[in-house]
Image (cartoon, rainbow over the protein chains, first blue to last red):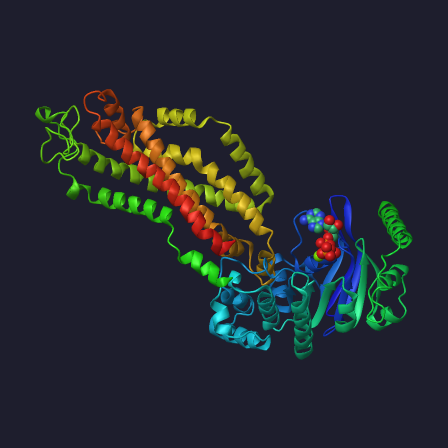
Length: 292
Length: 283
Ligand SMILES: Nc1ncnc2c1ncn2[C@@H]1O[C@H](COP(=O)(O)OP(=O)(O)OP(=O)(O)O)[C@@H](O)[C@H]1O
Ligand SMILES: [Mg+2]
């Protein structure tokens, strides 16, 4: 059974669809990439799962199942407990993901204390252990620091440690390296991969970097305009992509063997074809609702 | 980078120290007024009227800053006036701040209908001209210290509510709030533990500014005789009396005027200084 399953999830801002019948599954221990261009709705999927969607965005249909239980059918409190105990987030921007007015230590111990009912002492010991694991020198000192006293890479390491601390079954990583510079990006990706392998946590990895996908992930979901275009294994995708858009996306990604030649944008004709496909989908959806 | 910030934190901010120093001296003087004041602030002595301050010829010992036309000691009256001014600043400032900050936080963080109600209320409130509003309130409630404080709170809470609402809204959209939510915190818990510490510097700055405003409002109201009974020494009533006597005893006007000026200036400078002080640490 898959650990996380989205079934025909629909979300809107006013009348405008943001997610269109999105279905995807993450098995225990699986590393799945969620790929798509900017604005495709990748972050919204993550937020829908975590229950942190902005007020303007409403879920209009579909189910979010965690271990077979529908999150939307739960009371907000039960849902918070379930998410807090089983799912964690590695955010995109480590600068705004830590509260600037509070010391680092108490912030990253919160979940252990509040949700899992650990004693603060134990929680601190556990977090310090994890900080060692993500190669933070002098963790005791870092715990007492304020976020602005630490570098971006340090902050992201701390957030990774904090995400793994409660041994969640699933971690959602929303472009965890885009806010960092290139050399740090590589370290952080390697760190996430090592931590994932060691802890056996399932990972939903949001990115638009296919290079990262090929190194880190087993399966992937390609998203465009809030609609899933392809749901496949990474090997399958890189050898023979199914959808025309996926093929174009692959062609647009630089290759080590031929860095210049492969750098071409997704052709407009492909984009138009996908847009037509989405329009057809919306129309079908509408007539279906009318008929009901 | 961390070193630069630490240095900025350690550097002495003269604005902060000067204004804080004056307010501290004033607060101590106000508290110890019964010990420090050379005379009873209400005692009239027509034989000792219009005595000049001690550095001028014709002064008398025991009246270091001279006397007014009824022979009351100016220094003693300024000291007792400080008690009233600071009491109003403290109570009115704190109440205004508490009311405005709570409503602003709720509107800015909870949004939804709470925000709609509070924002409408602020808009309607701000449509009233404040001075008219104050005079109306005091006409209804009668003069007295309580009326002044209530008037200040009722008029000025919107200043806090608007600013804090905007700040809470920006903070509420930050990722750390989402993280706290994922970590299982409830809405109220997030507001108190995550949002409040971040708007606290703004609240403190606004609070000091509001205290300055309270002092000046109290002075204006006692100047136009809408404050407490004319017997009690307030800076505003001293200024009003001093104005009438400006030609033969300037000190009756100048001493409370300078004290008032320095106090209001200190409150606003303290606010500005605190803003600078908080800034490099948090932004
Ligand atoms: N607060 C909001 N209110 C209304 N619409 C929003 C809001 N946030 C995002 N959207 C819309 O939702 C859509 C999906 O946004 P989302 O952030 O999920 O994109 P993304 O795939 O994560 O892109 P990126 O790679 O840039 O992060 C976009 O069209 C965006 O305009
Ligand atoms: Mg995003």
